[in-house]
Length: 348
Image (cartoon, rainbow, N blue to C red):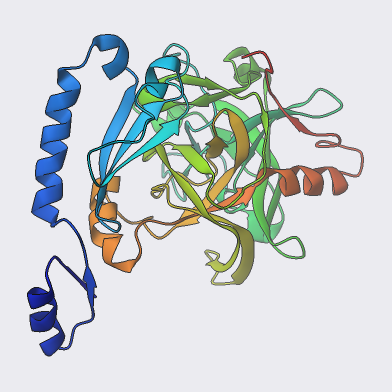
């Protein structure tokens, strides 16, 4: 399928056997529009320009997407525009300060056995939502397939990576529960955090927000088609989009080649390899955790958006949080995870 900007071009492409789609603006035109828009932004008062998180090109819909913070300054820009083909979306404010401590969306590493000099089987995923159960255990909800021993029904240790010396990475917890498919068709895990993780701040309702800042979680929501979402992950950091389907099913293949049916919701937010398990939010509400995407092998989101535009754009699979919480509690047997709740701060 080729996007064209005129009927004459459509006829030429159709004669060569292509299907065509009429786009109002060419790729070059969109690139020029981005340059013009960025020049306009630099001339705005700082209290207004500071509310603009990003400008992106949506090649699929032939438009620019202006992401602005959900603040009074951002609201000034959330108005019907006379500039054609610009969509303004509200995303969570930049959050609090940049805090040098682990939180939802940040990186962890794990392996089937304790780390040794071979670093055999080391995998990278992202923390999801910090949680607590009725016994006061500090927990984190991540993706089930991030547990390298999920097929064996056993746990594995979780480490905060020391990028200069992976062998010296401090242990912050262990998988105590991991589910992949099965009767619930969910992809989630529960990491029991140790005292070092709690002292580092993982007993706080925090997710890594835009530009490395801190987003405080205020509640839990359900995915609804059309709702704005943002996801936090170690590879692509903080990217945003919309819920495009509130219920989808897909097949996920384990390292041993087993096919698992996974049920969740689809969003247009870009997600890369290593983002699995990371937190998905709508505003400041916890929505789900990342399971996978069609851009997992892309080097970055700009490349993913360009390469996948002809196939409908980037698409990510999220696992809704409420069913996860229900399943964890139902299968806890009164032990770890019983009465689990996501940590929130309602007054934030």
